[in-house]
Length: 439
Image (cartoon, rainbow, N blue to C red; front, side):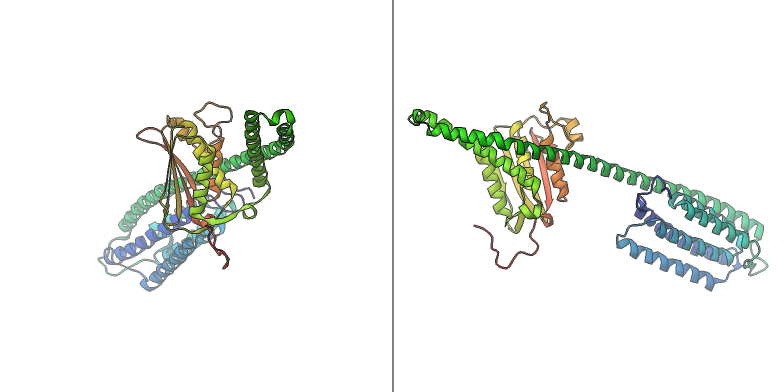
């Protein structure tokens, strides 16, 4: 069967849980309205009603609504079946109440239309037609079989006038409920469509990351041979008799070998990240130790005039980190350094079970259009080909760990990027008994 536009593949309806919550709210409104109507008809219009059976029906409806509330708190997915069951219960309870209070002669019989409209909006086609058939059969049967309304006294409100008043109230109630329900359902459907669009966007971004990873891995393999060749040549130059006595040239060759070794380390890191999973390439350490080592390593290989580092974490804990997380933080620091070579600040704190890192600079800040599309690929203020990929990768790594990356412009000038990560995603749940923090 082809799903409706608002229905997800696999049977789960977009916004289904919100629609079930809407039915629960409507059921409470129905219970209040039914009790009020019974009181008015009995006390004001002075008609005799079978109060005990009617109150039992309302009590059953309350119990079902409490069960629905309990199920909603379990955060279970809501498909066509539970919505269909909920509307069936509403139709059966309304039928029972109408049967006990005049059947088709009761002006509130028009509330059947509300059930039909709700089923047409919320349910699959086959379920909608079952509701249509059930309400039609129920209303037709109650033209013959029902408990008639009997006046308590000869001074009771005349039936035609009471019927017209009830008809007006029923119409107004139907109109109000339909406007309320259709508005809420439309909002739920739009929310579901927005979620689907966000999932499609994330899938496209993840596909882009996979392509970039494949290209990076391929480039790392390709670079291995020329780097090895250059390493051999530099080693030969350093041992050549005519060059061994030239101190200045030997220093330059040593510097070239050091930079070449750094390139080989970067290539090895790319291959390691591409070929191993988080659990296989992770390293056990503590939160403060990891951050301290990360900052010292970044500061040693970058040229910066002033780097302010403020680690306000008091309570340390054992954690596990991999190269992807380290590179994510470095990407944000590198972007701040490019925008502000004279001054970069890194503030680290802990808010309950969240790790918060704020990187600030005194550069030109983010353009408004970039803030609006922050984290999207190729969104950069530098105007370079391929710009913006560092922040794009950082946002996706943070998202994979359940965190967020936010960007703002500082009032004093420059930009601030805030990374928030749940400690549960990086903490060691059950450390071995023999393990001790390093240091």
